Length: 313
Image (tube, rainbow, N blue to C red):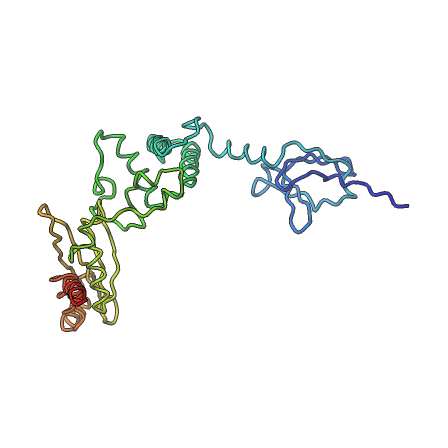
């Protein structure tokens, strides 16, 4: 009659830390990794090329005893503590004010530890910042704003503008953007709620949103290139021309003190003889005339047609 003997690895999870005694009498301590049913022990070894070496595959016949030194959760917590180092904040944030306070505080701690200083401490602080920012799904562009603001407040005591932080009044929204208060809320439903658009943006034929739509409705290839702060009042749209090679204009708009959006365009190609020849060809095209017409009237004609349709109904 065959008697089933329990495996020495009973109760061992992937990622836990073990002390394994082999049949040869040799003992090894390391982290258990299970790949395709094969058990490996990842052992710390400073003399190894990557600081670790692998023991295994470990077969049941080769192992006499196994002692669990740390559970998988304990190993994870230890790694987390090593990655974060000394915490800037030891209390758990529960509100949007708490989360914003901690992110801004860690950002200032990072700024106080320049890249030429304690390299390992800076990595720990950056890990703390990334962990908290990931909890609320804060995008990279808004993280960049918080970090830049932390550096700004080292030498200033007044709120910065985008030009102060970015070096320009306009920036790509995917690279640099001011976060909203709602972005720090622990409730994802609040964070993901679309920001209300000012009513004038919808009704002004020269607003950035309507200008972009007007370019596309005129058959031109256009995309919003850069935005200011606030984003509805200053921005740039790239309008491509149907020509060989790089041929595009940057159409920039800004809302003046009277509340009127003013637009101008600039040839967004290197100032070379080839670029000059290409500009000469583009200026004779129908697409260029369409672009000038949109810059002049915006989306007014389309809105007029729509209002006329309503009157007829």
